[in-house]
Length: 156
Image 1 (cartoon, one colour):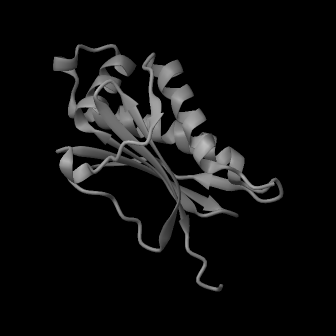
Image 2: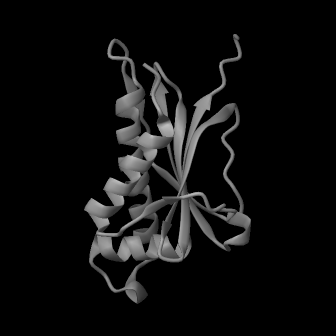
């Protein structure tokens, strides 16, 4: 059975943001261009094993700060850069863990790396991968993106 990764990403992301942060996020067809949005934080976890690739969360710094202040119970003005990166890393890790659970073969395990978070004013690129699925979400005025990248099989 073919997995509809876009639908699964939408479901998992909406559930995580609502249940963990109490924030309503909705899938949107609006275009998210990190270069136009100023500082964007990018969270990434690698999936290794029978299926190889990565899950990326591209999020405007302001929304990541809001998520961190909720996650750690701090005032937005008192939320540190370390807390912001930790929160985005944890959101990326939860999203990646859920996605990993639907893509691994029952006979072969997949493993998730620790999350990495970087600040960027343009889109992240993982060499040797191609985009399998992408979903854009909106919370209030903020757009963010979850992308599923798969390692390119050079044998084919």
